[in-house]
Amino acid sequence: MRTGPATLTGGDIGAALLVEASPRPGITAHTFTANSAGWPAATLFNPHHAPGGPPRPHIDSEKLLASFLGIDTRAAQWLKEQHIDPNDLGLVCLHQPSVPFVRTFCERMGIQPDAVVPTFHRTGNIGAATLPLQLAHAADQGRLHPGTQVVLFAMASGASGGVMLISWPWHTRSSSPLASFRRAPQHHLRRA
Image (cartoon, rainbow, N blue to C red; front, side, top):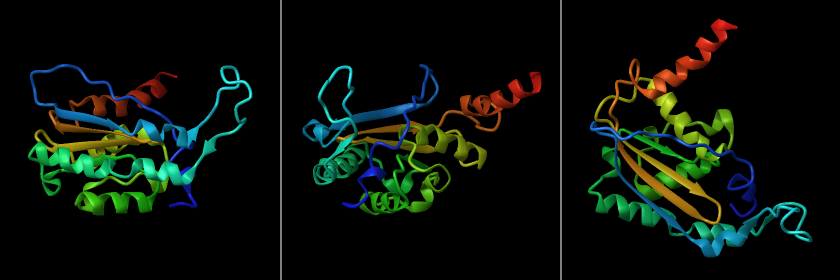
């Protein structure tokens, strides 16, 4: 891991997953943690706001790696506090900066690797965007049904992490926002 810090930072994109309030099941719990002391480990200075700063990303791989230590154990402890057994989860979506990272994360968290929808092999590190992408793939594969327990793990350099538990509320093939999203580009192509 020390020789490949770029797999953890600097090569990804961001995304947002918008949700609406609903009386149906949905997001049941969430948490966020950060090791803000690690933020200087991976920096990119804006030359307009920090004249004289390094003209390229600065990555201290030792400090960056150290900033992630403990994030997984805090997430595991939080899941225990929520009375969630990782083996009872129907779907696990996580930031996938590399294939070895996914294997190591699953081992450390006690998660079965087949609970994860792999994306790295096709997209590389796309950061937070991999979470909605994994949900869309799971919907296409018929893995999401009303009541499926889903967990989203998001991580960012510095390090910070978020965990969200979802009791999946939709029939994904016909009525979920993901199904609508998947159909939208085809609809626009037919009009052109």
